[in-house]
Image (cartoon, rainbow, N blue to C red; front, side, top):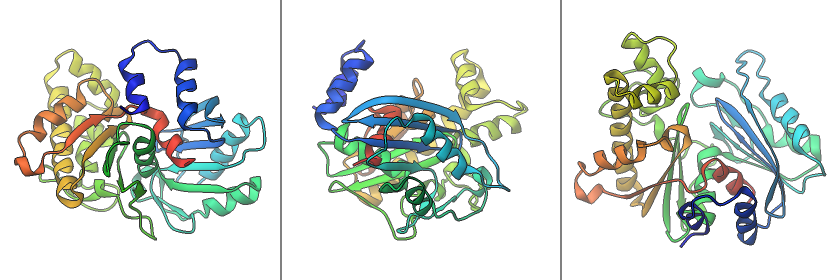
Length: 313
């Protein structure tokens, strides 16, 4: 049984004990950053122990593109010693040179930033840049629920939708970093245009941003995905409908991934993917797909740590 699955099964384990168990398998040191469209989470890790952690809201600035300064500021705020390695798991596209580009330009803007070059020069430290979903998939494959499988998929559902694919313990990536952005393929349920420029994508119907937009079209303005789930708990009909559409489209995405990669397992992560009852709803819809396209679907055992663990491997 995977190490972190044991942790999940034993309710009430302290943070200290979780760290101790992780260190037995993950004896790495460095600064690990998970940079998303909604928040930036950063940790200083010493010999497998998460020593210092910081989470901040991502400041969106499409004109000045100050994201690099946010990353540097957060590194400086958590590091207590010179890091041996810096790993940045980031939303969007990362090419083989470590250049970073958004795919959904409506979230962060349209730019190219030589992120690896900038960070390595600033700290004189080896730096690894990887798409956040791919990093999380790698973390789950080595340390979590994917560790006993050859073909692992990871879907993160939060502000946007990201997909990471691991085949025989190696990330499925391409030179320009586009591989894995399957959230920008189209769903039979989709009709709206998303920030990638495509119409009817999974991201335009199932993501947190899409759920808020669908709520707006139903007459409920300025409602967040979190608030939609809260309304659903109160058995509010319109909230239930939005969540059901999201879950149904993700089940369709799971079957597409099964057909494309013949995955052994798909792991759901992200704030929506980890939300109470969401994975069960996806499973329910997945059963309606032809049996050939069914796949083992589980909730992440590493949660917000998945990408940080994966990026320092």
